[in-house]
Amino acid sequence: MAKAVPKGDYDGIRAEVRKVMKQPNYDDGSAGPVLVRLAWHASGTFSLVEHNGGSNGAGLRHGKEAADPANAGLYHAIEFLMPIQKANPWITHADLWTLAGVEAIKAMGGPDVPWQPGRMDYEDESQAEEHRGNISDRLPDGALGASHLRDVFGRMGYSDQRLSRKQEIVALSGAHTLGRCHADRSGFDGATDPLAEISPWVVNPTRFSNQYFKLLSTRKWVPRKWDGPMQFENIMAGERLMMLPTDMALMDDPIFKEWVLKYAKDQNLFFKDFANAFGKLIELGVDRDDSGFAHLVRKAAKEGKP
Ligand code: CCH
Image 1 (tube, protein in one colour):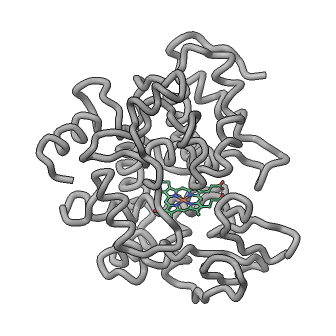
Image 2 (cartoon, rainbow, N blue to C red; image 1 turned 60 degrees about the vertical axis):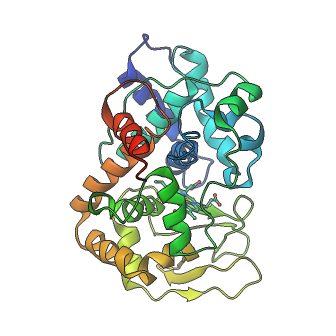
């Protein structure tokens, strides 16, 4: 049972998130990684040009967005958080999902990501569709390469054409230091044990660190021989680690690679850039007022400069 905390007590909500993160019978005993993925998928549908999608509304609970194969498995995260929302109906799902992602990152040893409340929830499918339009097919496809990453993140407003944003796509990708691929969710897999169906990018997938960049840049990654989707593997500490083609694209592309190497060397730099880029991500689509990243996103949209 989650605890009811006074209205507006977001630290109290954070404490409840830490409690639900402990899931002894789930993956590595932690809901943390899937909570981070929920915050990302709730936000990553944003389009700067069409100005729809994004974290406002928690649209992922409804209709086409809920059924989007890219969101397979995220119902686990939604269900983990449900008791908190039930005990605290004053917080919207959209605020709770983003706050849970941010708190999970912190609880797993990562940086403090800036977060503000103020998101509303779409009550039903028709309200979600009215506000969001058709936003399916907007999340990235792990089978593709660097130009796909530029298209997808460019649509959200992240771009490596502008100096200040050059590294954000790479910094965000560093979240793959957390969690695993699940064959029954994304089709990607890589377990050493043929009975296991889930595999991580790093050895300790519940600790936020720059390990993903270290391994990506120093290990020998070879295409996995199997009849599933194309993915890369390396055996380490008896565990089969994996990389998606999109992960490998960060090493193939010279601009992305420069940042992979920087983050591999300097965890503080990664934490700083990640906190900034993730803070911006969870603001996408939030038109609450004229402050913070929401303001920057609106300004960029007006100027027509993704
Ligand atoms: Fe991711 N991600 N992600 N990802 N992701 C998957 C899992 C996680 C892509 C594909 C996949 C980001 C960017 C990308 C997480 C955070 C982020 C999986 C496995 C695929 C496939 C899903 C499964 O089978 O359960 C692609 C492509 C991109 C391109 O950029 C970004 C950005 C973030 C956050 C900042 C996290 C965390 C996971 C682990 C989830 C879990 O359940 O363990």
